[in-house]
Length: 329
Image (cartoon, rainbow, N blue to C red; front, side, top):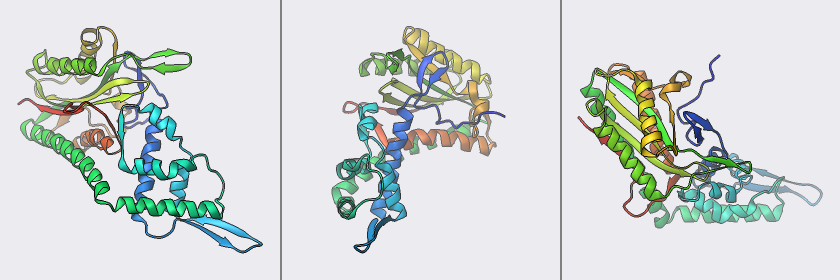
């Protein structure tokens, strides 16, 4: 039986060689941060107390609502490790609120006593008050506006491409730098932000003006950073399927150019197309205009790239770009 995966399963893995990945703790801590955001969303939507203490002098017990249970589960997550793995990032406002009011309960196990129940409910009240403030709502709106704008660009590219071409070719690549492994840990290559941006520009130039310029019809890219992975770029490429069909070969050619020419051997890449038979919902390779299912799967994978910014976003210098969409018809 095939090992089924989704297109997001490899996003936090690091490069250890040609088309080879190694899974580190980064994905675990990214998931912890998402769980905190989801739990905090439940907190601000709720109205009643989340934690209770009942009984008499002879016997007392504590209990919690479902939302309280989700929040308490998050108290097992180590905030210091989450932020250590994402040192160049801007976190979700709800995560920031959690850190302010609930991080001090980290490591708490068992049922709370009367004093702790009171402290927890007071913290919940303060979080709800902050969530109603204009400043907090403005921060959420700004974050969501950016995500919606990025997704709107992607949807327009897909819609325009699909209407213009009866056959399309979709390619998904992750490119970055090969990490080292010493003292039992992975370490990102020492590459500056300026260097990474320069390499990204060379990659896009290769797509637009290199050997595939006559068949290229669009691309989407997103730049990210991880403690063990360093700078890396997720990129989706669309080509005219009436003129080309060898997606695995083309993906490898782009990856090899990144690895050998642009980064002078310091780079690594992962071709999703080479492993596309393993994906449960695959929108890679050849896409006919009327293949609604494959176009839906391609949409899902690209939507994931934009939605990640709702949880955690790489900090960049003013006016610098970490996301882009290009179309060449």
